[in-house]
Image (tube, rainbow, N blue to C red; front, side, top):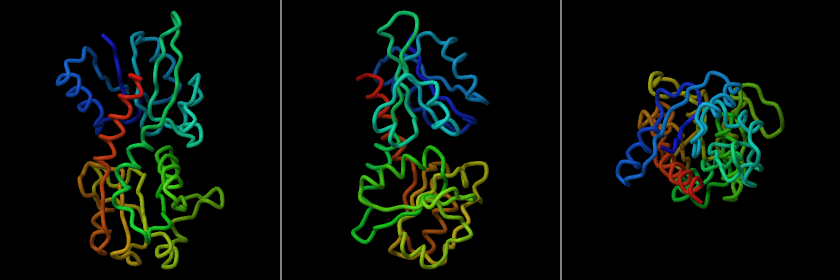
Length: 248
């Protein structure tokens, strides 16, 4: 039986396993989808050796960047974005698969947020600097929006510290995207520390989190009159894009 799966840590709130298990059942696909909660990316080679019938993997926090070192090839978009959330296994050669990295987060995010982007949305703030943030930044750039990454410890001119966000910054960046885990189920009162009081009806708040449905971050935006969107649709879209990649 062909195996698909998800690597990351922790995986207690993972959507992927239930999504693909139901898909395989509904479409009579002889395959299984397993969670692989590895505590270090160093465990990745051993994982591959223990599952010789692997068809593909999804990658989530915190390995979307770290896994690249173990891949044989990168899709040009994933390479430019600098992050991978889908790995395709090519078994055309005997004994050892060729591993190629892709990024379906970009596809899912773009299709999900596009209907909400208005003419006045010129700039965005991306909360977080990890692999998901890189995918979001790549997608925004393709849509013609400028962006700044918001970090606790800025490393370059493309990043800004949370403490340096002010009224002008918030008005110049009317799309706010949370790529951090703050507000996930289990810590639902948490939210990024941004000056919400400077946001209003012209703002769009997008949270990659999907559980809970409305995070504390989205509630704070909604209170200011902003449009809000959670990450559930993005998740479904990126999962279907991953399936297409594995089977192309």
